Structures are given as C-alpha cells and as structure tokens.
Image (cartoon, rainbow, N blue to C red; front, side):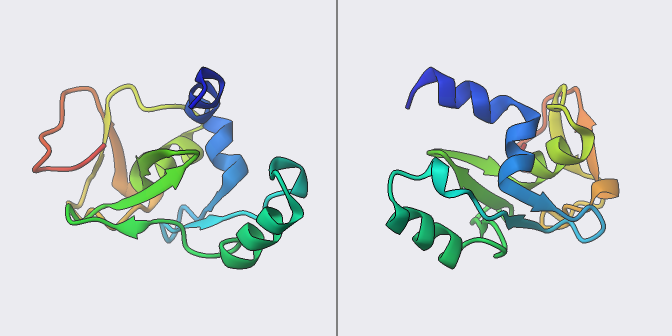
Length: 122
C-alpha cells in the first residue's frame, strides 16, 4: 500500500466521502462511488451493485463493528466519531454506555488516557 493512500485515509473527509453516517442511529452505510475510482467498469458495477447503500462493517469477536477501507481496518465508532466531529480523536474513542454496537454520536467520547482493550476498541 502506498503512503499516499495511508495519508488519505487519515484525513477526516475521506471517511465522509466513502460512508454515510447517521448520528441518531449510529449506522454507517457505503456511499456509491464514481466510475473514475475503479480500474474497470466491471469493478464499478460490482461495488455499487453489491455495497452502495448497504450497512458497512462486520461485528467482530470483540463485539465492535470493523470496516475495511483501502486495505486497512477501522472500528465503526472511530469512523463515526471522525465523520461527526470532522477530526481525528486526540486519544481513543469509547462508548459512554458501554454498548460497543451503539455508535450514536452522543454515545461516543474521545478519551486522552489509554483505553483498556477489555473496555473498548478505538
């Protein structure tokens, strides 16, 4: 993976270009992508036919939702926090109510102290 892709993913606007976030439900959905970002028309049709508008992510054995973007894995709560706040968290993102599947905006908190893996996944 090139350094350019890593840098692009770390920019808050990249998540918002790829995913729709509903801060009231906490859900993330794949946005349709333009044909220009694909190597072929078949890839474009496959992605948009299979994923556009669909729920993004998979529930892991840790009880969090993971989303793969450009070869990297991110937690849904991290992406939700970034899209909603327009910036990366200063520390880790935790779920205030302890429910790792509840990614509503008001339930996500940026914490500066290290978060135990048992508590949450940032």
